[in-house]
Length: 81
Image (cartoon, rainbow, N blue to C red; front, side, top):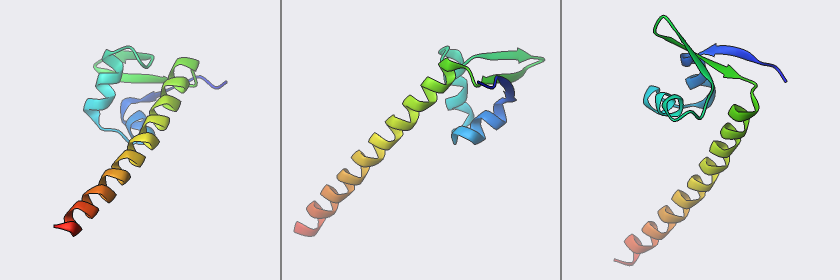
């Protein structure tokens, strides 16, 4: 498994997340990182990071499904009014 270090900006781009979400992941210990001269480097290819990202993808799919269902319910409620 490849183990490289990427910038925080690249990590955010790859995972389609904002700065605050990425910093929360760092502060909670969910990703491996180094801070060099106020710049974050995130380790990619580690088992811990890969498992966490897979969890995020599954959770994202579940949330999209829930949102879709709620939209359908809301549309039904609005059409009955």
